[in-house]
Image (cartoon, rainbow over the protein chains, first blue to last red):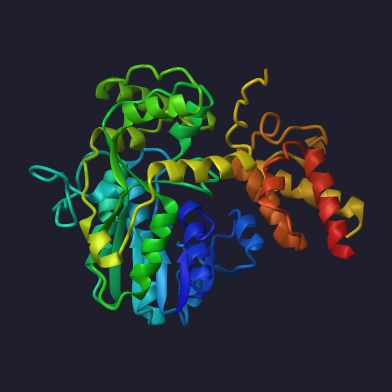
Amino acid sequence: MNALVLGAGGFLGLNVVDVLAEAGVAVRCGRRARSNVLPLRQRRAELAAADLDAPAELAAAMAGCSVVVHAAGYYPRLSLDHRGALATAIAQMQRVLDAAAAAGVPRLIYVSSTATVAAAPSGPADESHVFSRPPGLGIYHDVKWAMEDLALRETRLEVVVACPGACLGPWDLRVGTSALLVATARGLDPPHPDGVINLVDVRDVALATWRLAGLPAPPRRVILAAGNHRLHALLEDLAGRYGQRRPSPPLSFDDAVALADREEARAALFGGRPAIAREIVDLVVHGVPVATGLARTVLGMRWRPLSDTLAAYDDWARRLRILPPPVLEKQP
Amino acid sequence: MNPRALDERIIALIADLTGIRPAEIKPRDRLREDLGMDSVTSMELLSLLAEELDLDIPVEEAVAVTTVEATLAMARRHAGAAAR
């Protein structure tokens, strides 16, 4: 198997590269001109220019690959420009699909999100629960839906869509998904709404991606999530874990949206990160519990427990000074 | 690359990433507070440096770099190691 990983230098991408390399797969790592490739250089990985806005570059990077892992789907950093975000997301996905078709890639695995999983009438949702039109729950949801819809309509090559929940684990260098965890561990009492979030160890998502790459007849769409949690209860547990005071009560949806919108407007004007991002509010408030029977039966997934995920994250994040060192009890 | 040329190249890279003129960049400037870089941009700087000069910079070391002079010192150290 020869694989190209788009977004190889990112959080999920690095974990996919590690799993593929350990399995003996020849991995080519797609990268943008200005991206942090220090972790890939440490791995002595093969790098290939693969800017999603450069079709010829993409096709060249995909040449000779039996599988492409697309872990670089557009992620609108701010939820301020609905039309622009959708246009960028769709154009980039179309270029990836066109390049894969032109390069004769037989299979593409697109890493989407549980944001595209619609609520079930009762009980947890599964792969059959899809939105028939843009969900209208926020820019992030609509962008993810549009890219997945385009990918699933592709006929020139086999496309498999993986829908992971919020990933936690090593190599979240940008402190994306782990932002609330890090803020809680640092005692910052981050403002948050309450709702359902689906968590999964990023290493399990990487493992599932590898299995999807090699499966003779993979499912078209598969949910990857280890568990469903209420965010506020999770933050209470995390505050206890890191020796911090209990988090403040959750914000109402309206208050959370208002705060996120103010914060994003400030970030757009002055730079920096919003105290809470709008897509996080939307994801949490509109989150639905999901079932992962398909991943267990078809991919043989056995999800790591959250305690293992947090232990691995702590170890990695402390080495990189993202988390402070543990507070040691004074010796008598 | 001699040490002076190396320093000038690094300052040029910082100027390119931040939009600040090279003459205004001082060794004691902090990458984030003084030059307005965020964690992503500062890692991009070190990544660009590693690629251009073919240096092996561990991520753990890169995240500890917070000033211009620390960037220069780290590059000199790794460039020296690469030359040996």
